[in-house]
Structure formats: C-alpha cells, structure tokens
Image 1: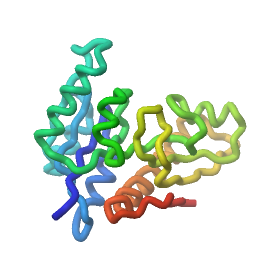
Image 2: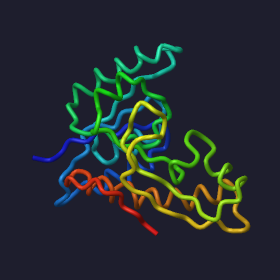
Image 3: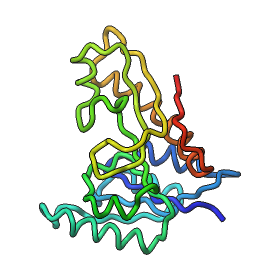
Length: 197
C-alpha cells in the first residue's frame, strides 16, 4: 500500500514536479493531490499534465481569517485522504491547530540552512551577511515558522559575483535533488538528517 502524499503549492510548482516525478516505480509513495491557495498557480497546470488531481482554496476571500482558510484547506485534504503533506513553495503561514493535526506528517522545504534565515528574502540576507555558503533545508513543520526538526540539508557555495537571483537559481537546483531524496527516506522511516554537499 503506497503512502498517499498531498503537495501544497502557491506558484510555479518546480519542487512539486521534482517530488511527483520521483514518486514512480518502486517508490513507496504516490501523489494524490496538488492543492494551491491560488487558483492561477502555474503548478496546477503542471500537476494536471502529470495526471495528478488538483484543486485550490483561494485564500483571498478569507481575508485575515486564517483559521477559516485552514478549515477549508483541511476539508479538501480530507477528501483526498493523504497520509503525508509536502509543502512545496506554499506561501501561507498555517495556524497551530492545522499544523498540530498533521504533526509528524507534514514536510516543508526552505531556502536557507536553517536555523539561519527563517522567513523570506533568504538569498539576499545570506549575501548581505557575507556568508561563504548557503543552501536549503527540508524539515518537519511545527507551529513555529521554519523551526521543525531538520530532515535534510544541501549546501551551495556563495560565489563572488552572486546576486540574490543567481544564488536562488543554484539553491533551487539543489532543492530539486534534496526534497525527493528526503521524502523517499522519510516514507521508509528514516528521519536522520540527510546532508548533500
């Protein structure tokens, strides 16, 4: 019996595609839903092209009522009955109640070497700090932002002529390697952090 995976996105869905393409053959998991908070998210079309069911819960009508948005999100997830959620560029902060429902069963990828640079603008912040290396982290989601147990990290050297954009592009390439590798290990019961050079 395959582990059922729902993938949450907000944008183009490149990490979603990397995850979905990895879940084939003898992989112990399968994607059962790609769900977005934006009806126009480019990743929805990519998921459809991969024959993955899609849906959206537009966050805008909910205004500042995060709990009601999360309830609607949870209702849609309940229909798909996933065992595991992978957040892949999902740009909404989830309420503690939602996160606690999925304790130990929700992964996220973040573009920094956590615990450095939680939140946004991580590439520019790494450059401003003069860091010699940057990277990405897959972690379990907890109610604290970008603060859950680390399941894997990949490091990227910072180059002299890097801009936030060039650094982001190289980190994204590593995200596409790291997230599928961590997901496979996690579904197999392996939670020791994976480190990619």
